[in-house]
Image 1 (spheres, rainbow, N blue to C red):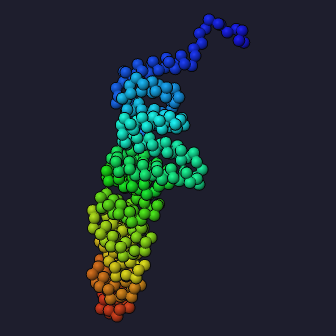
Image 2 (image 1 turned 180 degrees about the horizontal axis):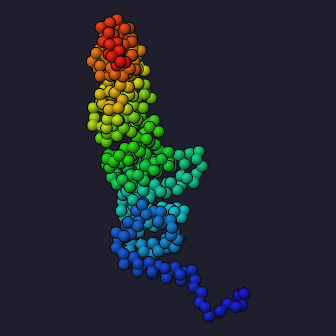
Image 3 (image 1 turned 60 degrees about the horizontal axis):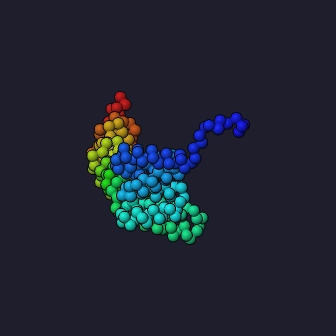
Length: 354
């Protein structure tokens, strides 16, 4: 086959191709301002870098820096590419040069972090060397979280902290995201993370902030759940009483009132449970008789028949046409010996039967 090759065809060497590429990139570089390169070197663009021929782009960047030594973002990009390709000695040397020129800024710390990460994950998981490097990485992340206000960077730090097993650092990043964005999505993410890492006091604080800000039932249900996990039943009930005073949809108030009644019954507070049911009765449009019956049955099961009679006298006559409710009221009246009340209910029942 080789005998058939046309000898007149010119074969370019690798260095000739590289030289041509460098010339092209220098022309392109002159056409594009520095802010383009700056954007190109940001964390959000790192994925794009992975799609390139890294070794070729390293040569381009080395030539750019020789020609334009003050081009800060070209240096940042070159160091990151050295790290990507495992050229750690070149990365460290380039980072030292960067520090001499620009000092200890955020870019320097982030690049140090990337070098440490590459090194740390080259050691076995149980290695002491890896543990030492991970601690250093955690310190850098903490420093950067305190320094940065940009949500994109903070989200990156959160993910990196999770990657290296630093839940405390990850939570700090999430808390700052909550503070600077004040968005529901970050509240929910921070709450779920705090719960999953057993930072329940932090979760409770966030949940309360979120509920009173957004009036979302999600927060209320999680708050109650956390109090129950901690066996702080009175705090759960107190929160419910406060929550139902907020401007939330009636159906959500009813859900909370039912939960309040349930917790009160667990703890033997039958009068309190009955009050929750009566409040639900007032709010409800279609379940009034159901909640009235629950209030009566709760008081009856707690041997608070006299209080049940008071409820019958106050609200019972509006449900007198309901035979199920009337029979329960009659039973309670007879059990308490209130014959006058029993007579009135009986007459109403007999009248209804006719």
